[in-house]
Amino acid sequence: MRTRIKEFRARYDLTQEELAKKVGVRRETILFLEKGRYNPSLILAHKIAKVLNTTIDELFIFDDE
Image (cartoon, rainbow, N blue to C red):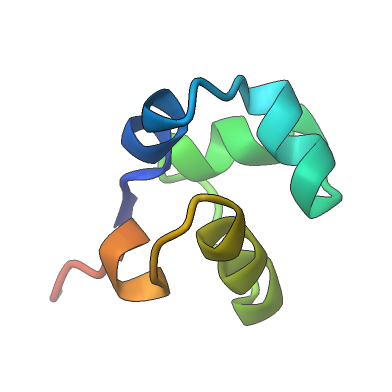
């Protein structure tokens, strides 16, 4: 799975730390999400999408394997 979190963060001029605080996780979690090393829970995906004013479908790209 790939994400567009970094791209959307840039639109709102948010750092990883700022986004992490808004959704209640550590900065490392955002880093791992951006690098594709961590798959978020549905609740976390929803929180991130809401903060970034987008949908889960726009934010997360599921690669068919």
